[in-house]
Image 1 (cartoon, rainbow, N blue to C red):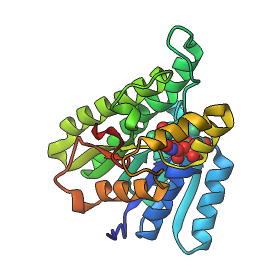
Image 2: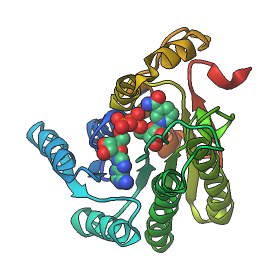
Image 3: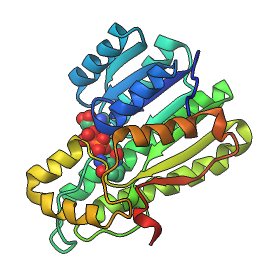
Image 4: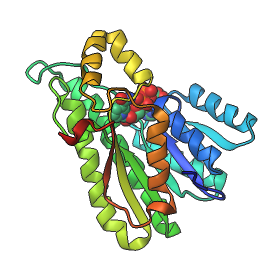
Amino acid sequence: MSFSFENQVALVTGAASGIGLATAKAFAQAGASVALADVNGEAARAAAEELVRAGFKAIGIRCDVADVDQVEAMVKETVATFGRLDAAFNNAGIQNILAEMADATVDDYDKVMSVNLRGVWSCMKFELLHMRRQGSGTIVNCSSLGGLVGGAERANYHAAKHGVIGLTKSAALEYAARNIRVNAVCPGLIWTPMADQMVAAGQGEALEAMVKSVPMGRHGRPEEIADAVLWLSSNTSSFVTGQSISVDGGFVMR
Ligand SMILES: NC(=O)c1ccc[n+]([C@@H]2O[C@H](COP(=O)([O-])OP(=O)(O)OC[C@H]3O[C@@H](n4cnc5c(N)ncnc54)[C@H](O)[C@@H]3O)[C@@H](O)[C@H]2O)c1
């Protein structure tokens, strides 16, 4: 399915890599002006410049979503540059340090929560502030299969991703009658630099074991998440809000 986002503005966090980068490209190819935000500002700007060289409209913004002031500035810069904000994909996220709960540290808990949950909260707050004034908009938050099931040694990550679904449903209820829809995607195992990092951290075997339990028997591609995000951001999903859509090769259905 192809979508048109002509004359629309999209904002993607964690846009320098993996799922965020694939989604930013897909928005640009569908005609949107795209703000690519990432804590790695250099990579975000480089990705945006590549899109501009290819004839698309894009800017790169350095933003650490754990810093609420930077999030406010990111939304303001997007609107100041392109005039509006139609679609936001709150995607930036990090893994926790693998540890069973008795051994996990407060530092890791705080770090994961500040990016994966408070980061999404801050993004939604300032995006909604603008969309409420504008009278329209869509938000897609990046949860995970970890937002739907538990995960041994991954409690901090799974708790944050469960929280993202709570934020999604609550905001969807608040804004359902005001032409603003809020949904989440729950990626399964997607091959991105995050997966490369897990392999580098010695989790390659665990990853392979997880792939064997994917009913489709393979990893997903970042572009397969981008397709779901574009659908949820487009008018073709106009009666869908508050949902958490699994894109995981069937992983969580049993
Ligand atoms: N890859 C998977 O299998 C998988 C599965 C389920 C959910 N997810 C989720 O998808 C999202 C994207 O993951 P990915 O696999 O593309 O990872 P990735 O590591 O390839 O990309 C994540 C991007 O987020 C950026 N980032 C990290 N912390 C940030 C911060 N504080 N502020 C702004 N940007 C920040 C990184 O610099 C990076 O560019 C994450 O929320 C992740 O939890 C991934």
